[in-house]
Figure (cartoon, rainbow, N blue to C red):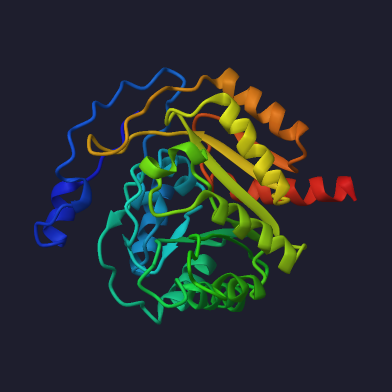
Length: 321
């Protein structure tokens, strides 16, 4: 599998600046050869091209492209794109992430309507909206999330909306603002176990993220909650099992677990490639701990098969009622 980043294009667009200036002087980390079980279909079909055309015609950003998702070929062939709102530049500098870092541009007030139009044109029954971190904004972008949810529902009322939010750290009232818009699924990723936060996710706080997810349920129990992690960052199995318990203590419904893949030589190295059998074992344990749904495989990503998973979530909730 190969994911190609057009580094020269990015530098030209940014006036010669590197995509990740905070990582530029770090020593290179070797990129390991991927095992045989990590193989994906290369993008380039006619349907993929049509999805790309729709995204670009509306002037939108997708996490599929910005984060270098390995599933972009499969998802875009189905016209499933995950939109990333509030720009393409993040105020955090996580060691695993390929999204550009720096000082973001001002919000585009017309973006929610553009998202709504694109969702309608793509004919999506279920859409995932994520964002960069916007620590520069007083509300962390909460109101922009709300306006995007409202615009989607105005453009295509039958589409269900899943959001993947930042942590709104030190943004009082931001979470309550977003929850009041009643997204169908509220996702916030823990990304890794707490012992790895200082190196992997230094701008975040593990227990703040747990509390964020717990608070969603306190505010509106009808909203499905979801969180995801990557493995292969040097975590121990016991730490992953404890993380599952922490999420269940917050009444989280859905857990996703996928293999970390190193974007560039400047990013955190892959410490191990977790086997498909190990992923299956994590799924079995997580279901036994009480999650409504678990997606655990090398190529699992937060929004991969999100529409199908939403249907399974609803069915699982009904089965327990």
